Amino acid sequence: MADVKLIGLWYSPFSRRVEWALKIKGVEYEYIEDDLHNKSLLLLQSNPIHKAVPVLIHNGKPLCESSVILEYIDETFEGPSILPKEPYDRSLARFWAKFFDDKGLAIRKSIFFKGEEQEKAKEEVYDMLKVLDNELKNKKIFVGEKFGFVDIVANAAALWLGVLEEASGVVLVTREKYPNFCDWRDEYCTQNKKYLPPRDELLAHYQVYIQRVTTSK
Image 1 (cartoon, rainbow, N blue to C red):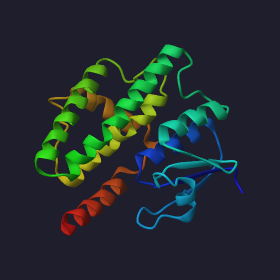
Image 2: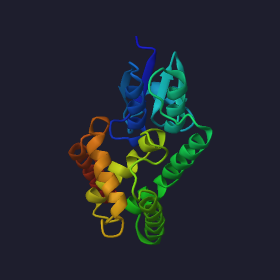
Image 3: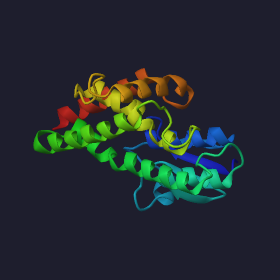
Image 4: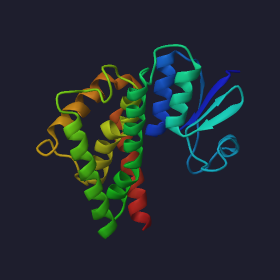
């Protein structure tokens, strides 16, 4: 039995971040696919507070929250570093990672909500895209010269955002308004394909999900 287990969902950007880090480090692990609608006893016992994936179990000890898990993997296992070594860059990386995670709720509301709340969320997403478009001017890496922590955490903005737009019909990103972000996104998804779920399968999943949510209201 492997001493490293990951409880996840194949379509979750948070689970994919952890898988990505484990692969970078060359860590062998047992992957356990959970079910959002019928959560396993192992998940409920391992994350009794949020009852959410991902959960990394190392030597029987569970860890939750993808950013926390990424830092743990980087500090615990040998292999290429994920966080920058220099203290300033490490702090900057944590800042950008929090920025991405803090905007996740606005992205979901802009896709799944309606009315005034959706419009407020869209404005927040537009502000996020403006910041990212400016930050990505003439560069493809968020911190330093090496792909790492922030870039892994940016996976939801790179792939999932566009998939959710296409599945829902809600347009948030245009190349005319955010050319640097679009260039970064396209290159990111091409160069990191092996760490991301197939786009067509992800799109099909969310099309079904959005149809189910829409018809149930």
